[in-house]
Length: 215
Image (cartoon, rainbow, N blue to C red; front, side, top):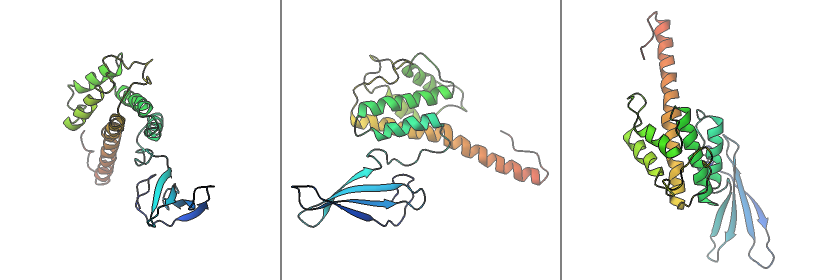
């Protein structure tokens, strides 16, 4: 199976504990398995069906939280809000979207896009003229789409109202998370990997008595 905590694949061993609910035969069970890499616990609540199968509901991690680990390059405060946004997705899409908007605003401001509200900060990102900072067209399209969720023009997302609860569809809230994941990759993961590759190259050049690479 694929671990819902760290996303690695492993051969699972399930432990089962019977649960008896008065007046509701047959017996139900809670089944658990532990990832050998991250030690994350996966638990399901299973109810037998008349045909001998079972209906299983994931209870740990919480539904919506199993989107895979946050890249280690993402700052802790942003990662914390992202994880919370994932956890409440199925409980309250509106709350999830509010947290996701705060994450996006934090990412943009950390990279110099600071304005009166989130919509204007997105405008600054999309109108970036520095080719070294401009985002790819695929990311431009999805980031721009966030402004259409919940009628942002009627509800400016400012410092005060970043966590304002605005009506959104569940699919829109999930899309906010997908946009964040792409932003994490663009703003944090790829630059860190590029810097690591350059450092490794420069180390080889230095060992050979050559000048470091440019850029």
